[in-house]
Amino acid sequence: MNTTGTESHVSLFETLFSDHANELKAVGGAAVHELRNQALGRFAELGFPSVRQEAWKYTNVRAIARGVYSIAPRSQNGVTAEQIAPHLFESEGITRLVFVNGHYRPDLSSAGPIAPGMKIRSLEDALADDADNVLEHLGRHASTENPFTALNTAFLRDGAVLHFPKGCEAPGPIHLRFITTDGGAGSGDDAHVSHPRLLVIADEGSKATVVESYATIGEGAHFTNVVGEFVIGANADLQLCRVQSESDNAFHVSDTTATVARDGRFTSHVITLGGALTRNAITATLDDENAECTLNGLYLLSGRQHLDNNTAIEHRKPNGRSWEVYKGILDDKSTGVFRGLIHVFEDAQKTDAKQSNANLLLSKDATANSKPQLEIYADDVKCTHGATIGQMDEAALFYLRSRGLPLDRAKQMLVGAFAHEVSAELPIESLRELVDARLDAKLRANIVADRA
Image (cartoon, rainbow, N blue to C red; front, side, top):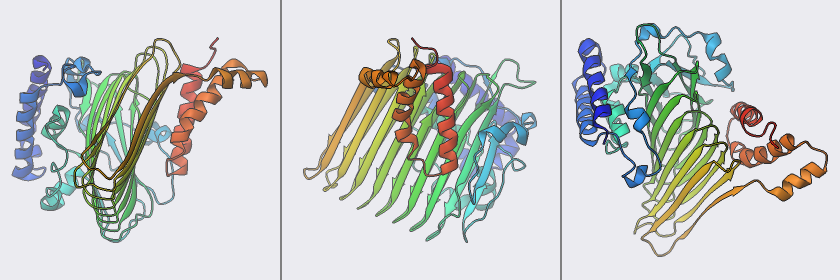
């Protein structure tokens, strides 16, 4: 536990809520403010995690804990449409909510067509209009036993609430775009911190695709701490795409929880390209019969970047199915961590679960730690898992060189093929093209160019 770091965030909370008490208490009323206070108390008890804790064994968050942060006021959100344009993708029927330094920017957002009964709102607006219904789920799924989730809940203020009613099929993807800027005037040397909160409810028989994306304007340090709660009803189908391409000086921590009902389907695609230190946690609970989930992940690291992917799939009822594929490409002195748990409960007979983690090391100084885990308490299941850590296939490289390709181009082709196997699963063509372009650019600039 980092006491100094914990105290600085508690102090930031007290300052924020002292300066803006009436405004913040109005967001959701007394019930939300009580939720905040309880979470702050839990964070103060837990403190930041340490490497002595098994779940954080390979990830030291001291740099986050020791940081000096400020909450950017709305007045510092002078970001223009031209500045965010390079970070956007277009798709038929798309609806976009843009957030700058954690604050919703309706002037940068755009509304697409919506199906009857669909609700797409900022968290502040949803709490102002419909607090009782929001609070049926807000804070009910993501556990504050995770100190970063507790910290996010303590600073609960803005984010997005999406509701897809029974039988609804969203006409296009919902894009939640989070932009962080360098510390602005009046914040001294403090880095910006934001705590976006997402709540997505897909009722029975609904179908939707949600995209979260994170980027930085500038190269300054900042800290993004996001929590997402996804509730997938019976026979609903929800796809989630997360693309993190923040600056190489940024810290990013996310906690995503998904609860899937009977015959429901949850698919997650997590692409990590940026950040000095990133921790992505996903917990999918298959809470009734015939529930399914698919978890895909791709990470491309260089320099001294560190990424920790922590996934858990809980099979609680019979006939559940899950597929998980995470791939990592690591160069220079970067480090990657994959911890994947498949937990099959006693009642979850006929479970079919597959898990795979593959890591490609492009440098002798890069490090990958992989820990796939199975915990099975049912006796009629099919469960497999596997992990590989290796270097580039020299035979394949020799083959391409023998066909006249220069070394850097041959390496780029091999690494690109390894990565694109995952990115090809992204369900939106324009998003897939944007991600592939960024992958290729990073490969050219940071990984395979001019290698002997």
